[in-house]
Length: 249
Ligand code: NI
Image 1 (spheres, helix red, strand yellow):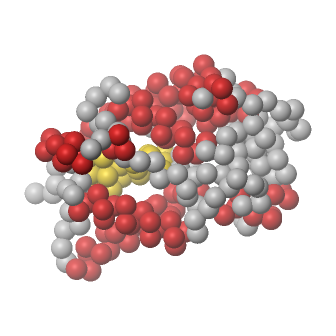
Image 2 (cartoon, helix red, strand yellow; image 1 turned 180 degrees about the vertical axis):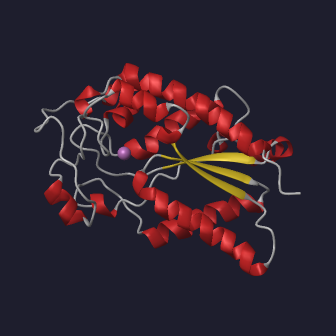
Image 3 (cartoon, protein in one colour; image 1 turned 90 degrees about the vertical axis):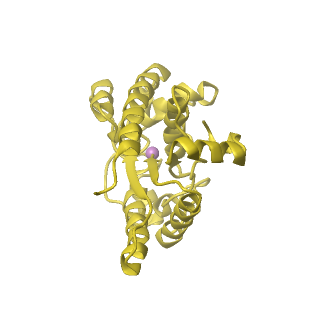
């Protein structure tokens, strides 16, 4: 069930049977010469939308802009600074909590978001701790590639040239879901170099076409489909376990 395609009465009825919601979260940022700008929010959205087809899982709207300041040297990138991102995550959680959601699961698609999402969780828990009251909700963050077995499959599919940005695995997932948007380019070098992540001008100077350590030319829609199928299994199992987690006695 997708929250954005439901009425408020349907959301209310869902809350009668479950207090768990999945929020895909990512970033809109450059992904090299052939990767879609939406790659990092499309991947978790694709996986969550597939997963909700198979059972009674509620998926909320995708939080599709994240912490991407280092990619701002490339057109099409949209970034929130960490403080804005943390504040916005806080209000999403407060809104959902207000209506009774108690288990809020963020399925993330961008490594650069992790520290800010974790800081947002700490800010939210601190509100309860300083007020000496229960938070009323539990929060969980999972990167889609960290779902059971997914990284292992990706390294089996792409033993070299996986890299860390504009990776063939994330590009394969978008190719599977959006075959009409597949692009090609001559990569030079075939496998991009790696390096530190600092500010936008430094990033573009080190990584002129936007890739980091990757050869996106290895991606195929078929490999993307395998990754999605495995990630969907992992997500369903994890969300069920999170939803069933009992509060402390
Ligand atoms: Ni990415």
